[in-house]
Length: 188
Image 1 (cartoon, rainbow, N blue to C red):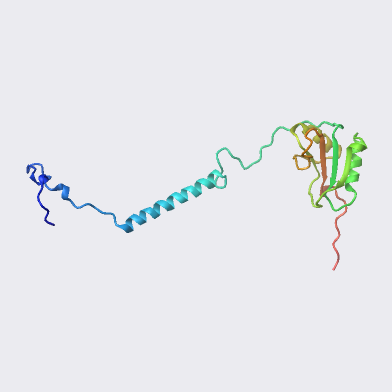
Image 2 (tube, rainbow, N blue to C red):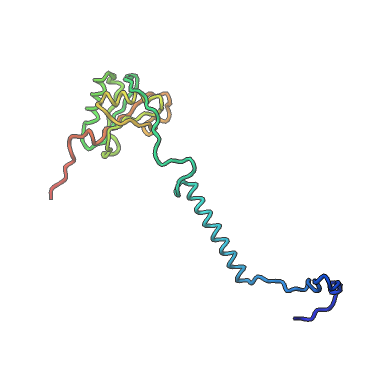
């Protein structure tokens, strides 16, 4: 034990038993131990941040209140409302199918001036679907779907003219379920 010069703390009564206590060796953290604890703390904090972010984003068990199953709200009763304009798009390889469906719509009570037929940008749409842009258009969309012999009905603004919100329009995309001619493949 090293020799230290005496000071006033060495002159305590012998009954206290604490003579020279201020000179006790101080435990020192070694640099390696300090660095190890710092690395462990960083790893734990980063891992907690990654797991928390994944959980909040719904990729790890889902965020609170989220659900992976779509919720199906109440559906409107079908209403045959011929005041809507109807656009029929053929999304199949069979030519003239939009005109045929357009004729079915006119036969159901629509004016020929209110029904427009044309081709879609693709020819691989699976199921014939009636698209409507606003919730209040669901009943007329369901009525049109029944008038053409059955079709899916979907709320979407994809086919709505963005400039005119007062436009009352339904869009029928004719799918492969209505096609009768299959696309032929060359032999060989």
